[in-house]
Length: 284
Image (cartoon, rainbow, N blue to C red):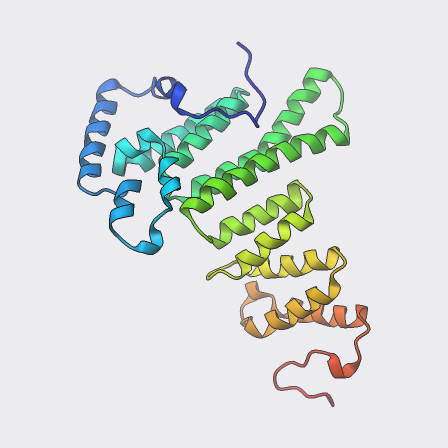
């Protein structure tokens, strides 16, 4: 049977679970299941336990628990190890060119260990960036020609849409308002799907979360500017600049001030309306 290459058609991982564990000794699997069951009964870190104890801020919504992989629930504290196995098997499948199986195993790893944001972000990266590139190469070899820009764009759109769906509908259920996941969704909309309007709310929401990457707020403003909403970008930058640590390189406060000055020129603002840094005056 030839590999299936439609990355948008990733089946639920449960039906082919047996194949995923063929390389693991039966006794080892039995031991892991038994230990996982004990850990679960003892209040291990699985979905049911999180809903009845612990920090309420860490509790996923009820519907997220339903999407927890059943084997991951049984494995309890061993689920992260099992997720790593699925992850390695996914890369083996990708090396064989079986992208549907790769996607299935990536999704399986995410659902086995949903509290790890690493699997969600890496799976979305594979779907949005790596899969379309690899599929394009395979199609070009098969067709013996270069794909058209429209065909390449269709592959990117499919991969980007699937990645956004994974992060928005599942990852955020386990990691509500996670700044880096929100930022990554914005990035996929912007650089893969090339949909600036769709990217805007995610960059804005990301920038408003504790510990957000500094670039989220800047990308939000620059995207507003590219959409012709320069006044909104200017007002955003003015509010942003005073909040930035001036001695932290990653904050890029100097760059933000530079953008403010550029927009003042672009908007042809009179001097009395221009932004004043703290400690300066109009005479300066």
